[in-house]
Image 1 (cartoon, helix red, strand yellow):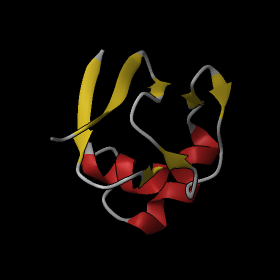
Image 2 (image 1 turned 30 degrees about the horizontal axis):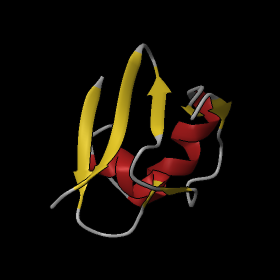
Image 3 (image 1 turned 180 degrees about the vertical axis):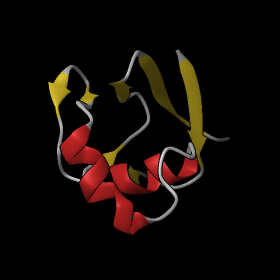
Image 4 (image 1 turned 180 degrees about the horizontal axis):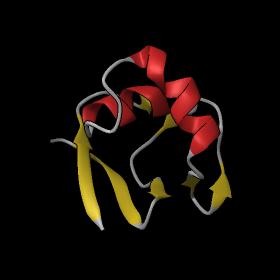
Length: 71
């Protein structure tokens, strides 16, 4: 599982996907989420605006990430 550190309170799912280079722009998030099965904390997620907080686990396409807080 790869740890992704953020320096803000939260990051949206769309911003997260851009940050890890899965999509090139926020506009691509909606189509990506409709094509790829993404789980946040074990539950299916389709909202690009879903807020991800430190401790949240995101999984898709055999990859897993955990959001952490940058100190």
